[in-house]
Length: 229
Image 1: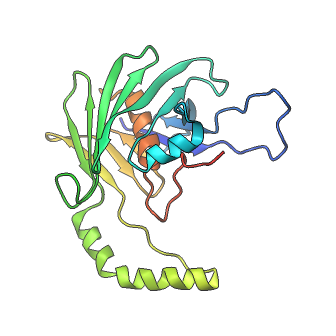
Image 2: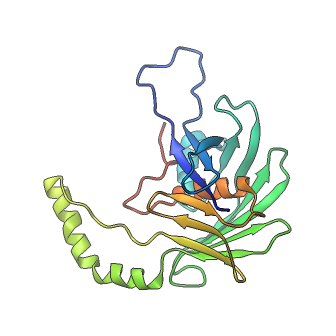
């Protein structure tokens, strides 16, 4: 049985919030029991800001640093999990996913293309007590096609800036994780979904992964955690 997790944004009320009220969490992860099922909110996700606030977070995220909280409710009454950066340098970042009490759930290692161990970005997901799963961003064939068409994409991008129209194709983004002969996880870029194929995968780890991948959207995407407000 395959379940699906998707990071979504909460529609914002355009009216100004009343003085003294706390703005609810702006993003949530929905969970569907099957690919055809209707998702329901299971975690509310927001940045966990360092002492320097938003400017410090935005400065650190340029180096691959991320810090998220997964709340059980939009009012932040109960923590389900958190993602923290264990290390990040030279294109290689290690993240820890912790439960609501700070205990380990698993780790996520991101090795940026050309910096880690290959020409594609490599994602390694390790859940405590479970096999390591490794996935690569995009298939080699589609990356080859994309680079062949890159000069055309540049021309389209220039035209888009000058005319305000046009649509540039994004690079391949699908990731399939393999643990031996098993495929426990998959990121489908069409709808930005994490598909969980293995019953042993902790959904909190998958939810954190959904938020983390979306924070690394390419130059044509919109990372959810780069807001200045």
